[in-house]
Length: 328
Ligand code: SF4
Image 1 (cartoon, helix red, strand yellow):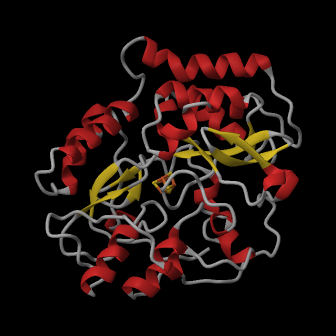
Image 2: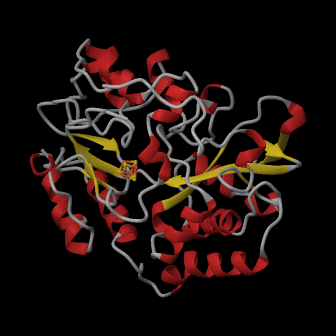
């Protein structure tokens, strides 16, 4: 799939704040006066960016959280991230039910469910980072994938075994589903040519739909009572490590094509998801870097250079990225 990703990363960030700015001042690269790109409210163009890579479920069952371009991971990928000490990088996504017959109510929200079990994806968190995609003159704060290097707008795990299959196959899945791609949304909002090829296999082998996805990419929580409070905190963007672990353990213990849960894998996953927290420190750079980005954002002293990622991420152990010149 030939795409022009240099200076983009449109599918790795939630750039709706830039569209809000466009609506506010007529300029697509006009963030707020303090350098903040907001994402309050939902214009039609903003709503188009909501949802998950490779799917269009966002338009039919809205997610309970408010983050665009969620990257759904498979069960084996969830297990691999947990074993690598990257639990802090992961978060679940639940959806509001389309109608009563599929709903389970938790924290006052009617959640989409399968056989009475709230259904969810597991994907990658997006802390705020200073980024300047789409040839913006100045960086703005935008929610960006935990693994995105804000200086190069390249993926820190691109060459790693952990690189998610969904990221590797994007935007082919959207094209196979005849859904708009992020590349086209970026072209429409900021110009340029991003999607350089549109020929794809009509039925990619790894495109999991419907019941194929259950236990493999779409997980079903067997104990809705354990989600009390969790759903409210996820919706508010305030989920705790314990909240996330409650879902990660189910995802890692799921069985493709069934609702069965392996207790052995569930215990192991819970241990991996919580051991770093219990020790008082995270086993990898990811958790400390996410907290550092949030602290930096809350200081509200303007937008720093993306180069602060060297201090916040790489000095904590994050792998570097080669830059675009090195790839040409
Ligand atoms: S894992 Fe890499 S390619 Fe995928 S969304 Fe994150 S930064 Fe982008």
